Length: 245
Image (cartoon, helix red, strand yellow):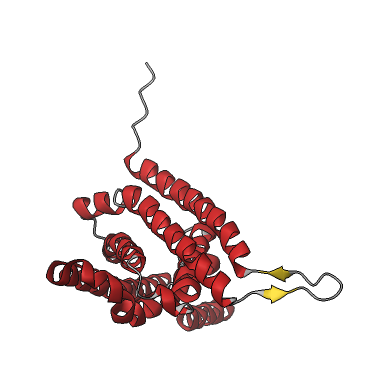
């Protein structure tokens, strides 16, 4: 019995060593999330500072070449954002999947389809406002997550993280809608992404039809994310329950 107990103890020890202790796994998880949030913060803060400085130096002229100066970093940051959805799906973070997925798909649709595929849109001022509002949201969100990974809480940053989205999310949504509306005549003129249904229907379906539907989808996505962020803020700063006498 004593030999069996020692053998079982040895096997359990080996199993724990192979799997890693809970403390080690937590440390690895925090390190991974810390690095991801740091990279995203550096990307969005670089764009925010760059656009701000260019605006003060060049004024409105800086609006029209925003895409050509910021596109590479924005492409990288928005493609990397898929990590947040994956983390939510596999349980690395406790974030709900739907709001994360809605934001990822919505932003990348605007970035790759409306801006990236339509050269005529790349010189419009709306690009500046879309990129600037996206960056404004993220330069407070990612530092909050960075501090969370190292068990720190800076009250000013926490308040900004749970407050800045109130004006910026609707404004960002409005800028995206403006971008879609401005792109509709271009898609109609070029016929890009349009197609004709096969015989016997033979009806030409313009891509602009889907863009008009997508405008409704944008507001639906705003509602989903706004509701999620409002719940988070209420959970953080909700009114204390009155004591029952």
